[in-house]
Length: 67
Image (tube, rainbow, N blue to C red; front, top):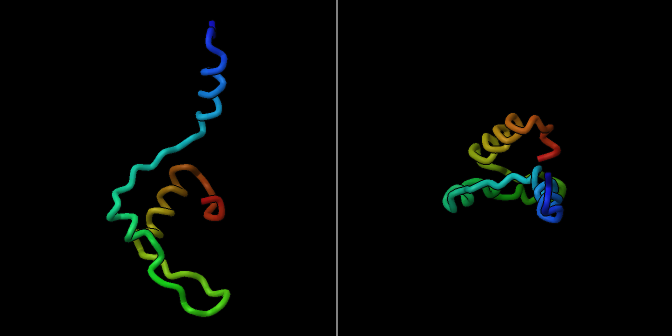
């Protein structure tokens, strides 16, 4: 029997929450290296950033656009 409905409801809201613990040194590597300099061109990302995105994609079964 549930006695604390407020806490129970908050736990239901937080159930889909995911927390990542990332080393500060890795954040610098994951950050985009530079912009091409042209309007509309994409950023250049490190190999580590791309590999991390692909791992998260596979773990959570997400399309790349949802990352």
